Length: 444
Image (cartoon, rainbow, N blue to C red; front, side, top):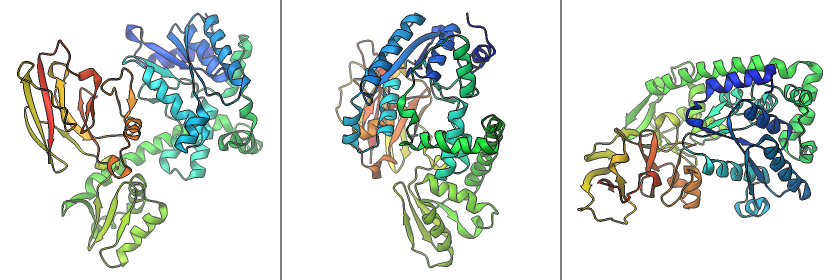
């Protein structure tokens, strides 16, 4: 058993963050580099039910194959299972038009999420230096207040237990215990923006403050508290100022502009709706012009109407639809009627209409919620065994961008049971054991 302050803190952190009852599997994303190799050792020696996951993106020829073999041998040495997935990354990148890094990330996380079971976790080896790089990168891109928080420690089933440890700490640990790792030659190239930051910008900061990386730990904690304070103010502002007017969500201009921080909060809202900074400034300037001016983003339309800014449809976090469904019965949502009916198996005839969903009633929990979809939503599409991010499902289904923001989901017990008008979740389908059926149907 490895005994070290780093391993002790690792065990303490992970036991507080995760529910590891029932021998939950902790999948470790392992490239073979320093960070993920140390994470693999820490997970195994902490007694976690560990399985290594390795992606071979086939981008570096023999080097990629050697990385794969290294992770296989590492798993063998640690006495754990290892799953390997090869990707033709260049081909996928060419077909989607996305750059190689984005393509690799999407392939990686789609595969990871298809593997995770309901009680499982994915551990990734992001550390404090990665967090600092992310913060700087976000500042350069103009990511706003949320960009200051860096990488979240937990996001759904993904946990990053090394965020409080620096790369120097991980390397010292590896050296102390004779842990070998692979060096990725691409990390030394300035071809990628993050590498340029790591190899050039951050060393310049360290010339000014040799303790820059360590100093940023306390600063990032301060930024997280600052973001939490800002979020409370933003939500209170939206809740108080956003009203119903002429069938739209709207802001009363004479009232909202009286608020001392209205430009701060509204700029954030406009950004969430997909408007550029230039468009946001034009919206503010429209106060001095005549009514009728229309501003459009990929997700919404804002109309200057006399003393109001009218918002025509939105993806904004605080203007999402969320409503409890009546079942059996009818519910009005988005100008449509959702009809909920209960049938016995004997009296029910399956209807292939995509605007109707047949669900196993005994698998559902009250209340049923119909709501707008969120980034990060996932479900198990009918006919599939693994999870799929809803955003990826919509891409595969070729749903136009103009319609994506209108997609609704029905939720039971925190799980998506139906992507309205498209597909039910495989876990709630009818089986030979089904006794009662809940049919949901959409009527215009």
